[in-house]
Length: 134
Image (cartoon, rainbow, N blue to C red):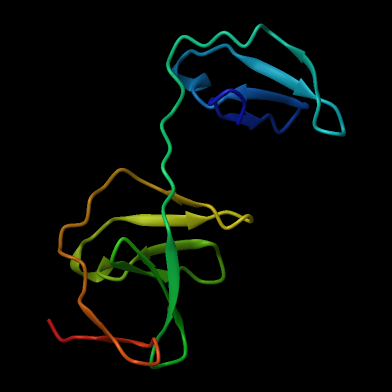
């Protein structure tokens, strides 16, 4: 991120292109091995920078010993051994998914909204979460 704008690295070069490149933005830059900008094209964007907000999340232990990811009251199950998580109500048709990057940042994988309310949990004195029947 630079001046509020996000960039993606080209797989074939050391150029970084604006994350809105597919929508016509031509801003790009090149970094050296130390992460310093060595070249850019004036960094002129034809759009405002993306808006971000910080979202907190936590992991819950299931009775079977697995982990659930809880974000804004909704729970997500891990997909295989990846950093991708899908809504725990996926079997009921909910299509919301999230991804954790290697730095623990959370991104929503699609623009769907949940088709159900969040599950209800009781927090015990020891801090454990017990799901209440719906």
